Length: 141
Image (cartoon, rainbow, N blue to C red):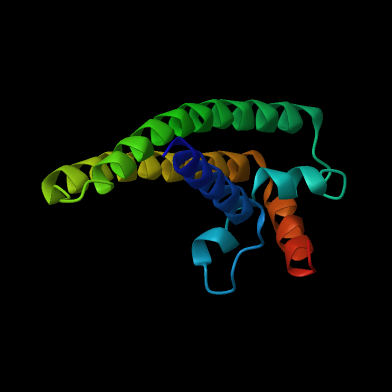
């Protein structure tokens, strides 16, 4: 059971990291209008990121990572509880749904933190920097 929970957490973490690092899908208008920190830092020279912006971006990312780490620990605990409930021969549907709600609330918090981070990062960039990043991303960045 512990191994399954760890595998689920690792899979979720890998998925979340890939989602943040992946270029936005052509049909995802939200992602098309935001810039992940990896993209900003990759092209920091091309967009003339200044020292103040770089520091603010690092601080924002570090704050978000702290929240992500806390949420991962909580999600691990809640996932373990959910797996335990599902292993019963007769599954208590009410208990499973209640536990799933707790887990999904944590997932919502993670997504909200991700969105908040991306909005903060966009707001740190000038209009010209945003336009240049969008061009670089379209070109295969």
